[in-house]
Length: 107
Image (cartoon, rainbow, N blue to C red; front, side):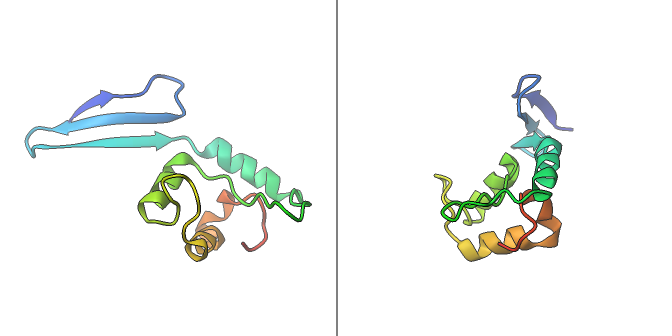
């Protein structure tokens, strides 16, 4: 059985745990985030047309754990810039990810 060490404090946005599996000689870090407040806000913003500016479009609010995964897959750079616009749009337009967007329009 793996030993669990908490790395985060109560109230932190991301809950991090460090696990040590001595039998398998392995360790790993687990990050969890409560995405419900982000999803609820995105759902509310989808009800309103917030993109009235022609030069700037606010299209999504993404939880950090999803953002980090997009960095690992190369969609987003380590500095936060979208590297693969096609993959980014495909990800946001996927029906499973519709509540990551703040608009109901296709990206």
